[in-house]
Length: 197
Image (cartoon, rainbow, N blue to C red; front, side):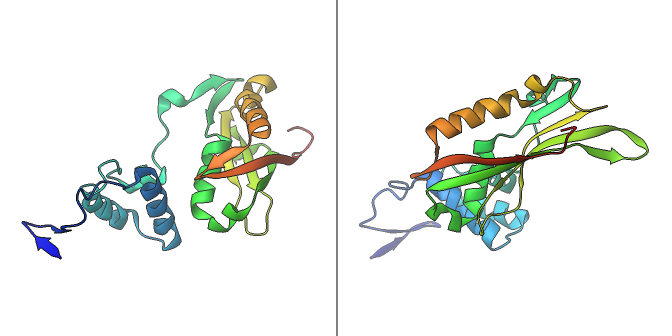
């Protein structure tokens, strides 16, 4: 039986409506739903403002839920003769797995990486050197950005440029990657780059 109070309906058998609500699972399910059905950020933000009273840990903005917010300037490093931001392999895999549900049935994620320079414009000095990744699978999404370097020329210190990436990949290959109760073995399949890279 439902009891109706001032602006709320609750079953007498339910007890506390917040009990048993897993905030992390709810966040992931909402993010997957929003991406799958192409929900606008304004509509998703409006929904979050309603849901936050039922699941207090939810963010209030779509950008926070989808992790599409701005880069914090303090996280930009000055290395190898330029500016560098590391998004991370694990963080990007989490975002991909939220959107590509077919990949969750895999036990192994074979990854391919690419490093290459991208000039901004012929009339502007400066170049981007991103580190890109891709899951090698027929249902895999598009490539994802792991890190990005910007400088007047290519990175002048390879160790500084690749340090975060190498450290994370060593850990992922040794320990695997966990997402929502699934454990994935990580295999580095290949690195694709030209001679200068």
